Image (cartoon, rainbow over all chains, first blue to last red):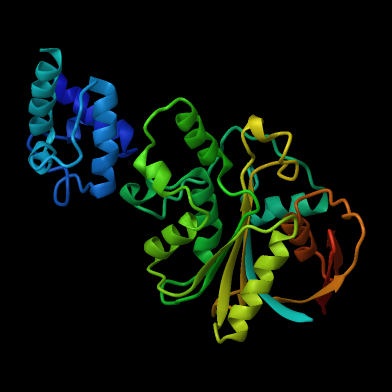
Length: 89
Length: 246
C-alpha cells in the first residue's frame, strides 16, 4: 500500500469505529462493502463525509461512478487523487 | 391497582456491576465518580458493537441476560433525558455549520436503542420508547403491565440515564451518575431465582414533589434488596404508591 492508501485505510478504521481491525488487515483490493470488510450503506455516507473533510474534495451524492470509486481502498485512493487534481486546477 | 411480578433484574452504574456491588450500594448508597466507563458488550462481535453509543452499550448490557435467545418479548425503553451526549454533539456541529454525521443523525431518535435491541436480538415484537417526567420509571412499568395484559408472557423494561454534558447542568438535576436498570416483568426464565411481587397504585394529589435522594429507578433497586418495602413517589399531581407483597 502507498501512503495515501494507508491514510484512507486508517480513516476508514477511525471513522467507522472498526475497533478490532488494523491497517495491515486491509489490502488495497479488498472489497469494502458486502463481502470483504463488510461495510454497509450508512458507512458509505459516513465515509464520503470523512473523505470530503479530510482531503478537502467534493463528492457528488448522485455520482453514477460512486459505486466504483468506493469499491476498495485502491479505487478510493485513485478517486481522491483525481479529485485533488481537479480541485487544484 | 396494578400487580407487577419482577422475575429478574440487572443494573449497571460506573463501578457497580455485580450483584454484590449492588447489594452494598443498596445498604449504603453513594454516587460513584465516573470517567466515561461503559460495559464492553463482548457478547457482540466488534462489527455489531461499533454503532452502539455509551447509553446503548449500558442498556444492552443490563437487558441482554434477561431475555432468552428462544424468546420473543416486548421491550420498553425508558429514559427521561435520552442521549444528551449525542444530541449535544450534533447541535455543536449544527452551530459550527458542519455537515452532520449520517450515523449520529440516524441514531438521534429516542427509539434508536430499542431498534438496535430488536436487530441485535432478532426481536420482532413490540417495542416502546418512553420519555416521561420524573416518574418515567412508573410510566414504563405501567406500559409493561398493559403489554402483559394484552398477552405478553413477560416484558423487558430498561430505564437508563446518562450523566449529561456540563451545558445541561442548569436544566438536568436528576442524573447524579450514569445508570441503567433492566427488569424482566412477568413470567420467569426456567433457571431464574425468586421473583418479587409488587402492587403499584396511582392516586391524584396536588403537592410539591417528594425529594428522592436517588433517581427513583435506583430507589426501586434498593427496595428490591429488602424483603418488605413500600415506596411513595410523587411528581406534580401524581402520587405513585409501591407496595411489595410478601
